Image 1 (cartoon, one colour):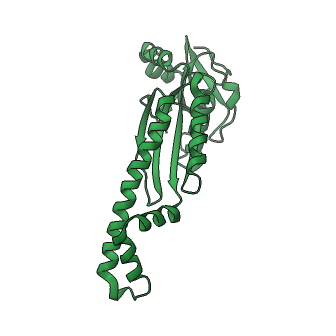
Image 2 (cartoon, helix red, strand yellow; image 1 turned 180 degrees about the horizontal axis):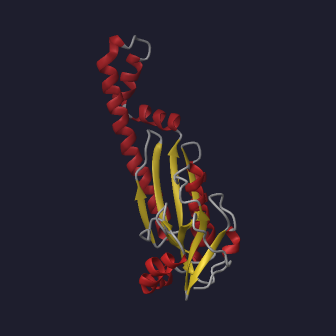
Image 3 (spheres, helix red, strand yellow; image 1 turned 90 degrees about the vertical axis):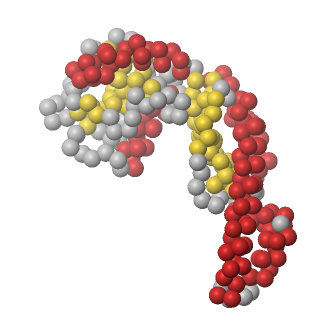
Length: 254
């Protein structure tokens, strides 16, 4: 096997494996990640593993390790197809890379790389401006408005059950708005993507989170549509579109 850098792993070292790419991938774009040494390629025929020499005794899982993992993959995904490896994938040496990872799955990896060529992922996160949405809920429901008025200036003990009822009604109303607003976001952006995955959101202010599979030729369409939508929702919700990135949600981690 040839290597992009010629660096050999030592006896007290190992390879952290970020993902699989074509042999000609521009690894020089991500020479440093902060996890170990330089990021490099270990090439086997038309394929290569994106690797970094690390101390195998050092525990992985710190925030900077997670950031490094996604940063390396996302940087290369902007310049060609990438198959992400599962976070924390470590192999002992060159022989293991070839005999246990690359060679047995050469046709599988090559086929997947062909499928994802020219495609990237964008992730959209939307969160409510909670005060605005709660004001909408109160204005739209007379029962909520009345309960809010009656409990506003009285001691909590004196309005215990009314406050429970108020909380239930507000939560139900926000959930109904969330479902409708999330569907509106999806209806506006999905036409610019090949596929999408909906993720769960947390917190009262969580509105929606979608991963979109995007053809690079239509990337600008999605970005423009998201910008228009963000302007329309300004003051009511905050939208964040992140990408292009590796296809974490659309290719099974290897």
